[in-house]
Image (cartoon, rainbow, N blue to C red; front, side, top):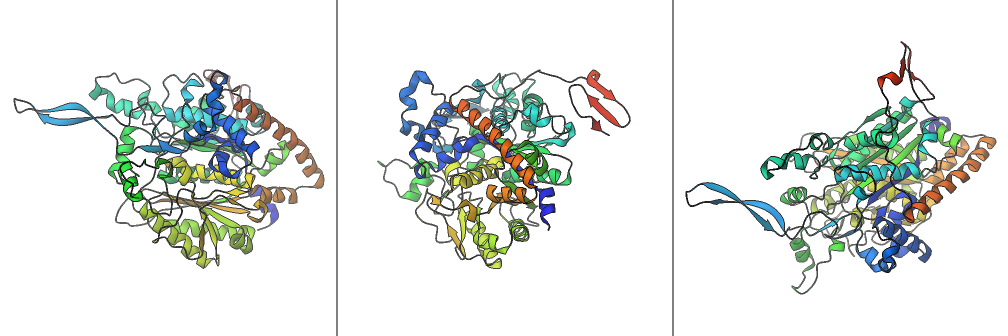
Length: 579
């Protein structure tokens, strides 16, 4: 493949943002929370300030803000502390027979078997940041995350979007579970049995593609392509594939891609626990052989590829701004990295719909082969590592490690570095691979690979031939590691894998395909872009900026269209939509 084709097909990550148990994602804050003990004191203070802002700790309670232990203890995976329901008093209806022999039900309460999750940092409430009007939590998170991603680019959306035609923009975003909070489908289904009125919003706002719809209508005003492709725990990579295919085809020049999942509801927790998929308090205590007087180490509940008992649920919303190479150069946008390619495959016939199958061998195999063609064999063998799905279940640790081991041998990789970010962020379902991507970008930015620090050893049944599992945060040279592989395995046989190209290698390619004057112009423009992005970051950490939310503004009506048989012109748009 020629360098010209690389340039034509490049899909550049020009901005990213979001919110997870690690805090705000933009400017690397969320990633630095994960590797907190491995970064400098200056960066630690910046991370703590960002966390304090996310947790709503302002000048009125600086004593808490300055208490780093409080900030660290109430972020990442931990015991329940930021939910709207009581995990020690979860309601349920139990049957009984009355004196007349009639079957009846009574309201009762029980302690939830699952006592930990990767919740948003304690105190974070997106509903307080904009006029949320009873929006489901997943949509509130989507508004926050999409706004963060757009502003992280260092250029106002109106200016960025004015450089492309309105139908050259797309938004692909969604949730695997839909919106199952009381304001969404859960409330709609529960209302009749609870004697409540079903609202007019619950049915519509519960739909899985609603994060994209909200972003179009209230954040960007997008009239281009939209939608979501749901694929269980591989949902983000499915949507990333749609975005890449669009940009490579030339149909779109800007795509906002992401996911928002808010599954920390008692019914969802109970559902996954009924599948014996989650790490319960009892199983964790048995695993660690704890005495009654010893406390449960909830912060270490998720242990990918180690001795483990199940995964830890998480909430997360992550978004990425993707642009083509020409627009990136023209506007001086920062290249945080680029997308190599994304591969999706099913498992074929299988015994259990929830069990892993052969499809993931194909997706990872194709990703490896494509990266080898793209960047060369040496880059794959000596300059790549893997962000594993790493769900922290006994079944995943054996099946996924076998895939990596077999493929490493086939591609002559001797000590393939493997890590799994779910050790810190838990399993956010649709957003899981989006968590992997923002931490991949953070690793290149900081020069530190994240370790699976929640366990000291890899389980004995994990395949380790040709693999090297990273158990501690590890300093590395980003220039010597141009490739990161991301892997996702979802219920139902939804497998997806991708390879991401480092910012160093991405910029090297951009420069190679530019004239000297073009590259000088780009670098000059990029200084201003980075400066504006830095100003946004500082203002966010100081609590001076609210999410971008434009309800009822610049609403378009049919009278705003000028229609012919060749194009449609839209009031306020510089470009016409060609028919």
